[in-house]
Structure formats: C-alpha cells, structure tokens
Image (cartoon, rainbow, N blue to C red; front, side, top):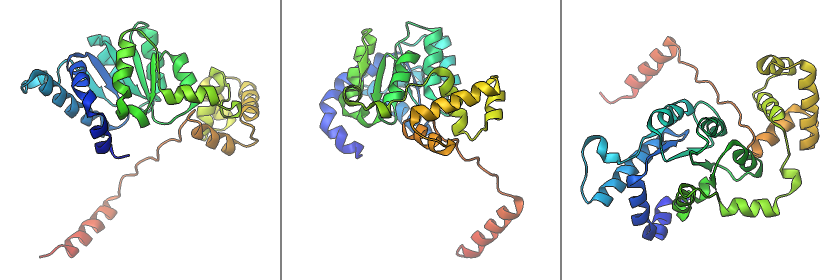
Length: 268
C-alpha cells in the first residue's frame, strides 16, 4: 500500500474530515505506537487547517482526548472524559482489542465504538458485533474514504459495516466460519498460547474434563485432529494470535563485546 497515492485519490474529502476531527471528542486505541503518534500529528494538522492558525498547548489537538496503546489507558480516558466515540484496532499492547470493545460496551452501552480489524475475518466480525461494536471496518480500507463515512454513521447512531465485510457475509463459506461459544473461544486462545489441558483448566478455573470435551468440539468445528493444526487455523481466521516472543536482555559480557567491536570498527 502506498498511502501517499491513496491520499491524492481521496484528498477532496479531507476538508470535511478535518472539520469533523477538529471538533470530535474521541479516544483512539491502537497496538502500534507509531500509529498512535501519527494520529496525534495528523490531529494537529486537522485542527490547524480547520481554524486557520496553529493553536498553542493542549489546544493543538482540538477536542481529541487521547491516542493510547492499551485497553487500560483507553478505559481510563473514557471513564474520566466521556468521549463521543471510541475508535480502536483489534490489536492492542495489553489485550485483544475485542476485550476493550466488550468492556467499554458493558460500562457505557450508549458509547459508539468503531473497531478497525487488521485482517478481513468473518469470525472476528461476528465476535466484534457480539462484543458491542457499532461500526466495523478493515484496516485495508481505512484511508479509502471509509473512515469518514464510518464515523458519521456511528455518531448518528447507525451501524456501519465495511462493504468488504458485507460481501464476506454474503459469500462466506461455512467451513471458514466456525461457530464457537465463549467458553470454547477462551480455551482456544489458551491452546494457541501453548497450554496443555491441565494448564487451561487451572487458568480458566474449569474442570479438566470440561476442557478436554471442548477441545474435541473445537477440533470438530475446525475439521482438524491436532492442537497445532487448530492453533494455526485459529490464527489464520483471526480468532487468536500467537504470543509475542519475549525480549531477552543482553548479558554484560555480550554488551562489552559489542562495544569492543564497535570501537574497533569506528574510524579513529
């Protein structure tokens, strides 16, 4: 994707979009720190263009409440600042974005929530609707004029679905849309994390026989017979994600060797 080319194609919509964003009280949650920072910079540009001058201090970002990377931060901002809309991606630093949607909808049922899915997925879309998302769109089309339309719709109290998701609903194949209940989804996520049946039972406070039964039901829904196959399919369908690799700190010896090599290669 070349975002610059997309901008030139839809730039005629930006004055209206900038006017909306300059006055909108919103919280934006994303798992990407670069995306959060870019949103703040873009918000400054919207406000400057709309007001014809560059405001000072906190006014530079207009009515924007915050751009955060965790669900905990987003919930805290919503608690204290009562935004008009919550915009979130389905991948955050601390939890799955759907958990933020579910908790925010539980606390504030009237708060419009716009969810941006990183990948096109019918199961994820169904889960998002159940969690309380009023608007759902894919990341692939966020710059193609749909974000403005999505925000207008949810602010009017209407539901918005990305056209690509609507097409997926109409043409979706049942084999790619396993219907799992909440308990099975919880077990599936732990399975993807690499937990065995006993670990899952302990983590979810379930009898181990219940875990074993539901793992078999997951196999049947996915049409697989092994844990690894179920985990890979769950990730492909967007129902779960593999845990990030832990960052291992470098030992003092390794650090000293790196510094020694750097000094040796640096010009005197």
